[in-house]
Image 1 (cartoon, rainbow over the protein chains, first blue to last red):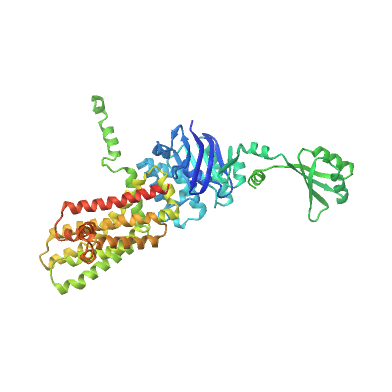
Image 2 (cartoon, helix red, strand yellow; image 1 turned 30 degrees about the vertical axis):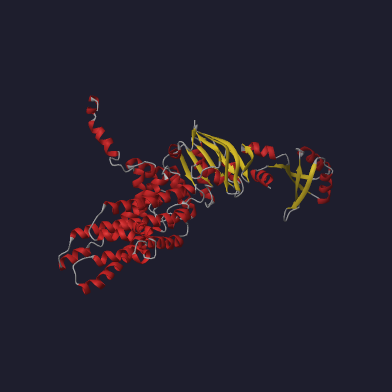
Length: 309
Length: 260
């Protein structure tokens, strides 16, 4: 079972503390997201885990191996996609993958097979002979992912893997990451909330170099989702509806929007309890037609905004 | 080898062949190959070769027919000055481009060590320099038709040119690791290489106190070069060049380590 243990990791650049002592654990078969606004310390954390930067304090252990004592062994286990997928622009896709494969000790038919495998997984087979300088951002991102996968590492560290991709590519790459996450340790960083909700099993929320929340996406949403938003759509007179809803208890805030070209009125009710039954009763008593009462799903976006505000 | 192994001798041979028999690690040769590809896949290599050969030939033949002597002293004495501007052009991007593009991150996280990466960059640019020098072989060949050429001196001079060029390369690669700005890397390399080339010349040393003169002469790249192109290969000169190159490659490794 592969695992990564990060303990009290800190990194300072002179006076500036990029990381103020963070600890977390990532396990095989799980996708862990480092979530946080720009400059939170996500990239720094990844660079230390991959051995590119050295920490000021704290430890990183991978499979109980210390990263400094066993750097070469550990680096061979890791596939790393740095932020914005840096590549040698003078090379073709094939030449680039060839180089990365050889640096991992692959040669001959083994190397060829590895290149074909990753090209297939990242949908690059038809683009192997293109020069990287001619590729679009999305394709470069895929080459970056391909080179991270070439030696079939047991650990994948992906720094913002879907930036620059179009919506179709995002879905394809996410599917691939999800598939890879079943057998590998995957740590990815992102500031896209849908990504976390779509593919991650574990979230570590970093802000100003500190962990401010962690857990599964569901746990985080529950923890921070003490407030609930309820959407109500009614048909009929606006003042009557407003009066009926105004009498409700446990309501923090009511706002409304009008459907264009219809007599439907949409209310958003902010509350701390589930008062959907009360709403229904109140509107029914006011003789209004209820078209919809639904609890609006609390999403990661809300959690993120709340915690990093 | 055990007796049982003999039955499978063909397999043994096969695995032996796959393993690199030389000391060169496959990772290292991959790095060198990549660096050479970066030269040849971009216009740099071609522009360098055309400029180098054009310059050298023109400077040589301009004086050659005036002196009407069948030797290449003119060529080898002009070479350090051509190197001075062309070699920094070859090295200025080696590290600065890795930092600017961010490829340094994939490079140094793929179990390649910093000393390996530095040595590979030096090796690749040295190979390229050797190719450029080999392209000037037509000079001694054509001169040999015109008169009696001392091939021994030609051979030592080429070795001297390689060692001097290698020293310039090590300076250039080191300075390229300090800045991500290629122009800065180029200009500082020209200045430092120039300083080390002339440091031992009389025009520099005549104002100095005596004990410094020998020191300056010792560190002058030009002094060692001049004695080699006279046809004498002294182990002291060789040792000097090797340590000079090693020193700057070592500085290069240390700079990269500091950036971690």
